[in-house]
Length: 100
Image (cartoon, rainbow, N blue to C red):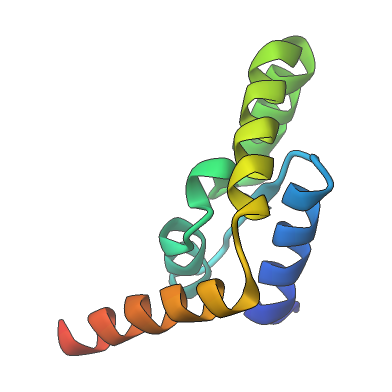
């Protein structure tokens, strides 16, 4: 089982390398993390392997759409610093804690 921190780093590294990012979740915590992460709109998030496989096939068949998603993720990650990412997460988790 990978830690959330490791998953975040590898996703950011993939975005920086102009690679598509696919993620699958099998529990509520991971689903929340993936859907609320600041880069969620640049990755493909799925709740089962069949949906993930369908999206991989879709991107394989639609290279222009894949490239647009990859470039958008790359542009976003280029503007990030670790300080900005930390600030974003602190705001996100502070907000979530106060709403409980």
